Each structure stands twice: as structure tokens, then as C-alpha cells.
Image (cartoon, rainbow, N blue to C red; front, side, top):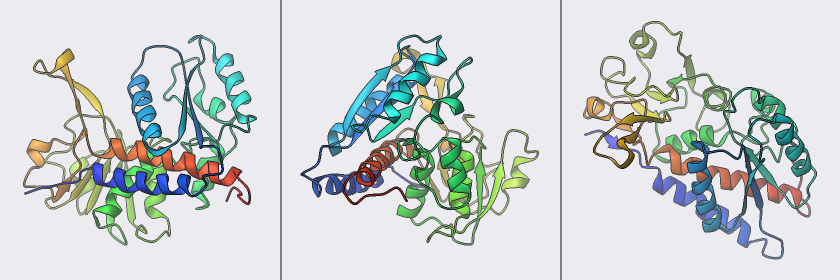
Length: 296
């Protein structure tokens, strides 16, 4: 049978560590995380609800801030500048992706490295390249946390990453090739222009996929016995579900059952760990701003 790599126990362990870190500094105010977004209905609203629940669970103060006018990029930039200088705010998450005419890179570039809690500014990504990260994208951290928790083969092993976005695929590949204990993987980075996916994945012991292409990974492309960490998230039609849709990852779980050695479920895999990593990153930023703390 294919082992299910559930995210819940990984998230619970992370949240326990975060609660302990906050409780140990009981004389201080709670860490403060602000999620900034266009004040319009979007898939980010679902993520906002998960952030709010997780923050309440671990003791992080959470603020949900819409910039009001969805057509004015300058309003978003102005608010981020204010938050950058607010000593009562430790971490800021900016909705992404942002549609034109918003420039996401310009927006997050307004934040100090520590407050850019998702590690997606040019400064934070550059620090990751030289293996001196301050903040790292929570999704990439979550994928690594799952792999470590379930002891997937990484060190010195052939590992594939499908997807090259600056918010998931690229930082994940950089984490995997880093000299940190338990990584040091030999990474192949694949993307939408990769020809002959089966050939490119041949020999991969562990596969991380974050392309948002439902059913991409099946027995025709995944090597038998490989481990699959499915980061992709898409909505697919399903008349049996409320709203007529359901969430799906990049992997076809039915096709991979009994073929892949292990697989993260979607939902229930990387998602809950991502939120837990976000709370952990916000708490680290809070600790750096306190007495005796400093940004690494």
C-alpha cells in the first residue's frame, strides 16, 4: 500500500514548539502577524480563515487588512510602508499572486527582511541563494518539514522539483540542495517546458510537485517506489460536492495507489503544515525584535 503522508501530526508538532516559544516570553506582548490583501473576494480569503484559526490556536495576534481599493497599487504600497515602520507589527504577509497592475515584487520589497514573513522579497530570496536565509516561503518550509518528519530519502539522493515559481519551486529547490542536515539532495528542477516528463523523473527517489496541474503525476511518469510530496492545489468539477467542485493536487492518488511508496493527500497534506510554518516564522520575527534579539 502507498503510505499517506498526513500533514496533521507535522503541523501539531510545529504548533507545539511555537506555543512553547511564545509562553517562554510571557512578559512580552504576543507576536503580531498582519495579512494584507486587496479587499475583494478571492481564493486568498480561504487562506485568511486558516491563518486566523491557527494564530488563535498558538497565541499569535492576527490582523486581516484589506487595502480597500482593488484597482490602486499605490494604496497597497503605502500601507506596507506604514507596517514596515510599525514596531508593534512583527510579520506581514502579502496576498499573492497579484493581478496587473499590481507588482508583487515591488510591494514586498517595502518590507524589512524579518517582517517579510513569507520570504518572497528579492532580499530574502537572495539570502536564500547564499544559504543565509532570514525568512523562507512557508510552503517550501512545509514541504521540507513533511519530508523530514516521514524520513523521506533526501540526503545525497536524486530528488525532483516540478515548478519554478519564486514563491515555491525555486526556494524549495534551494532548500533541498543546501548543506543543512538532512537535505544535501541532488535536485532536478522541472517546469512547463520540460520535454518527456517520464524520462526527466526517471530515477527520482522523492518528487515535489507544485505546478497546479491536476492528475499530472501518474504511473506513466512517476518511477515505481518513489515518494511524492504534492504541493499543487486546484479546483476540479465534482457534482457530488457542495459548490460542484473539490480540491485536487498534481498527483492522481488512484493511479499511484500501490505504485508510489508514499504520497501526501490533497487536502490534508502540505496545507496545514504551511499555516503552522507561517506562525513559526512570525514568532521568530517577534523573537528577533525583542530584548537581546537580532535578525540573523
